[in-house]
Length: 213
Image 1 (cartoon, rainbow, N blue to C red):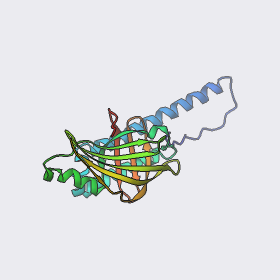
Image 2: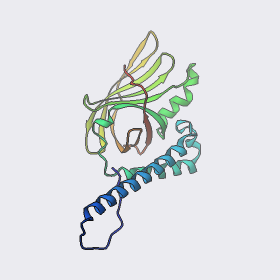
Image 3: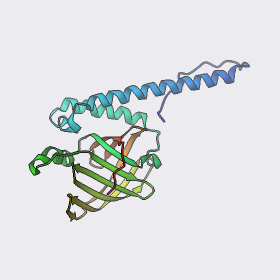
Image 4: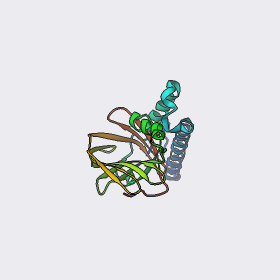
């Protein structure tokens, strides 16, 4: 999945063990690639772990620069990945973002007598659907429905179709308000790293549960 470069090996006449040697070199390369990816991923997660989903990063340009550099490293490792297939379908929980609108809602939720819970992206590639969700436990939720179109190996186009603000016993429908695209520049069994049309970044993890309307 990662892009790796093997050290050139001088030509030697094949021996009876040449196939075994090739297999060994291939296995060694995979181990090295896996190690590099693991280290880069660990560095990224360590950088964002104390950033309050990005709220603190807004006031720390040095940390922001370091995180974006680490995202760039993950993008290089993911450059050969196809990230718009079935593995994209999941409930993804936000770990960190630069998106100001989401961060504003998270920060100011207390003004409405509540606080933000999990912030989610719920993607279903087969159904071509995306829900952006902000929860307000125990019963509140704001979510925006979108239709999606797979544009390329890593890019998904989306178009907002409706939005809903919901409480325990009430619901307020809101009009849709736009379209755009996002690129998943890295994807594995645990995390996804995203850049969007506005140059914002998003890091999410696979949630331990499935969110449904």
